[in-house]
Image (cartoon, rainbow over all chains, first blue to last red; front, side):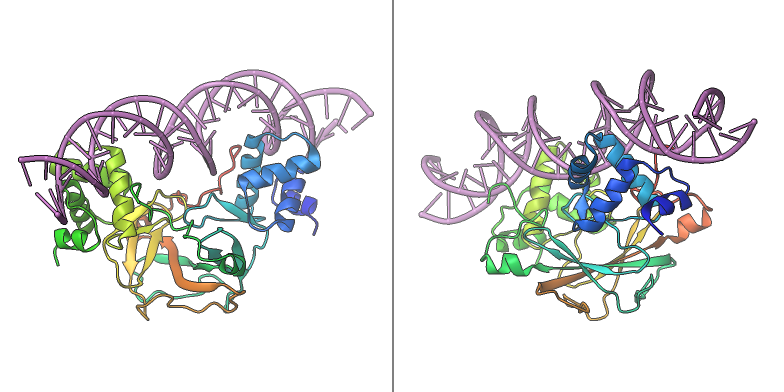
Length: 152
Length: 152
DNA sequence: GGCATTAACTGGAATGGTTCAAGAAAACGA
DNA sequence: TCGTTTTCTTGAACCATTCCAGTTAATGCC
């Protein structure tokens, strides 16, 4: 099923900007709204910021995109949906990399206690330093929000 | 070790607002900055919002507080540090509940692939519906950001 | 193909959480 | 007690995101 058909199947109208958004996100690496907007504008000319946000919401709601929000970053979007993979996030540069989930299906993990919650998803984020940042030397962590007092 | 001693041990000065912040967070349930500010003001009178943010940064940086940032919520703070527990988050009301980690120490989980990352923490968030919201009926999820297109 | 319906897009303003900046106050070591 | 340095104050700015009202354009039906 191509993107246009997927949009229609979800009850959404097919527009150039939506197709461009899906395409940009599939090609990019966990893009945030701003990067999506820039990529879309390269493809189809002017598109308002609002239209990008609206479309990202619509596409996320329809299950064509997945939204992730690592602490300290703006929301990022990915086109890999339908499995329950997890993410590796670099504390220094914020880069996000997919890691496969062993079980594949949500919730892939059971908590030790449920406290009465009806749990449908276990979201796992592995925090660390990516190979590029590691080889770039011992710069301070940029993605550990709330850890840098003003006076320091 | 009491809070004053802990602050000193971390190289931080002991002030009434910092003690009040630690106390408020220990008594509260994963408070956000705004709630911390209100709780602190009840205890010690006027404290500027900026002072609250500064202190939260300092205390988090010193390891006396832990900051969590579930998608769709402002940052929340907790005083339970030194173990690697996880969180249950309600999709409807946003309430956060601690769950023990089985291994206790970070990173408690190994990813299936590391992609060259140097991983130091595995953060697990269990998403679901808390008992209160569940018994309150089938209201739509409020904490699933990006899932509600404007036109819907 | 033309037309009505209504989803999608536009421009502009506003919001909430958080941070920046510069100066005043208070904690601590000598 | 005094000087240094951190912490706190006020006030403005920032960013990602959302709200609003009006316009444009995709779709279903004739």
